[in-house]
Image (cartoon, rainbow, N blue to C red; front, side, top):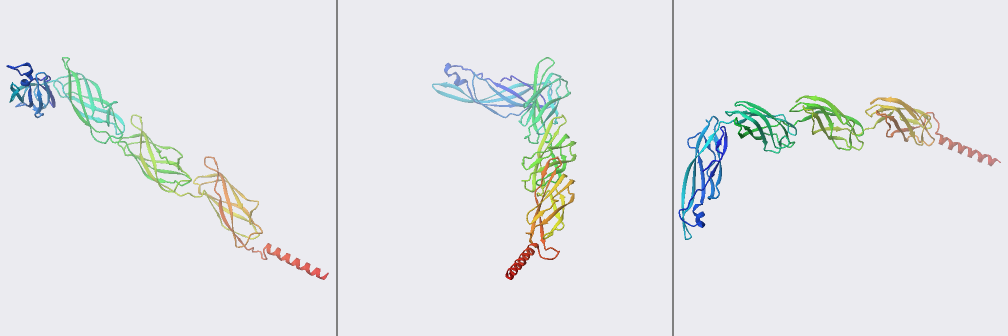
Length: 493
């Protein structure tokens, strides 16, 4: 029984490799039958630590057959408590097996045997290491720095140390891979060093603790290379940076410009610099007047108001609709980051007329020409400048010499009164209603010329209050009287 590597380290579970060598011999026989009697079959190995402080964690191991030509290596786990004095300790190894004691004329005689041997393992006083603290400022979906504090809990100084760490999860990378190594110089007994590593957590990484394993490679004072493979720890990332939009109010309306106002809250877990609220929707009926609204820097838990102007197309439907937003910001390293999982519900009001028109007196007497006063109100939600109104009428109504009106500027919600001339023709029938129409040409706040829809207003024709018959009836009466006079005159001739 051999132990090629017999050194073990306190404070951890060590792997010790036992090498089983078959030293069988033959007293009498032919070379062809040698392997029959020298092969140990159904070999089982059991190691114990007797009364030493060491503990063998591996149970009985089955090896099968062991021949003279091919030794078998058996790894066993040996735990060494902290504080174990350096020195040699014995492990008792028991081998149970069967073999052929005699082979003659094709007949075998098999027996069972048990062999017990002692092997020495050495508890060293070399430097050995433990991770005493591990932290990271990296968030899920972001990168940052992982710092591991490594302490020399051994009895001697380690020189030219290299601390290598490895992640067992693809959600956590160290450097550009799942492992990274850093030089740490000399570490004296009881001394701790903090080693930084670049790290990143995938956007899909769960918010949990991630296992980190590692080793420390170093040189002893004699210049001999050693490796302590007992490093292990767990690290938890910071939660993903999130934002919330609250207290949403909307002045959006179909066919008009409007605003969404609200409060953006940095829900943490870290401060965010140069925060910008952006419209992130893809709807063809929502046109951002401004793509984003900058609100400055926000500490975790801090909030501030924002306003984002949007335009709603004329073909859009009114009602409650979901509007997608994104929040862009920079982290403490000045790197641009974004959070897109933000949506709000905003009310879109139905489309309304850009202007409203009202006439206090909507009647006109048959055969009359009169002035019509029209009250015009700006419902655009923005000022209208260089506003020109034009009146249209069809027979039996006609516009007079004054068929246009003008005002230099009309603020949102403001009203003005314009005066037009209106006439009825001879075909107007008292008691009937006829329409007149108006439209408006104006400049919007961007200086672009716009033409409004056409607005129709009913006009009622009434009987003339001046007495007598309407002109068509008078004309017929005169015609009849004239004809009668002519007949009388001719008869007298």
